[in-house]
Image 1 (cartoon, rainbow, N blue to C red):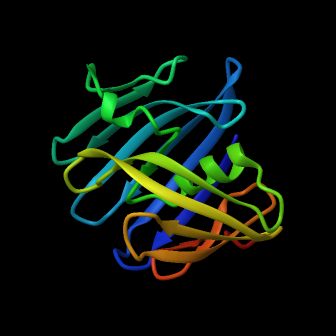
Image 2 (cartoon, helix red, strand yellow; image 1 turned 90 degrees about the vertical axis):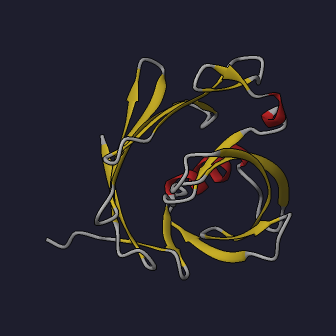
Image 3 (cartoon, rainbow, N blue to C red; image 1 turned 45 degrees about the vertical axis):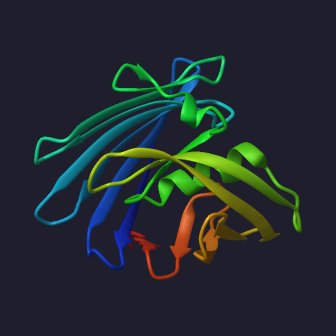
Length: 178
């Protein structure tokens, strides 16, 4: 098991994530403390970092079950979501961890870019919508993330495992000393 922690630069919240291999898959378990609200999620990924399932719960009663089957069909709380058919990854608005999924899955060469669609989960409403994005690899530890349906973009720094170290204005990794 490997543990990661991030601080939300705007929210002041803290995410504590444990990542472990399990039964031929990867499993992430996370607690995100946002002050008045606490979010907990469990996510399953293939060993190739392909999204499989998410169970998200909040301390104020919201819940979400999101999954993608072997044929690429998406399900939200048990209901089919054909509008997500082009999505390959999930993007949680409150977590930098989900940037790692396309970074690891795509394994871009330096200088290469890829356009993707994610199933974007709004952390306030738990609504899920398709979100077109682009990742460009600048060098071994830097990527540019761009929203393809807006003007948002950031240069993200990652470690050797593709985990976010710095997401300017949004998240910063907490490194335990000692």
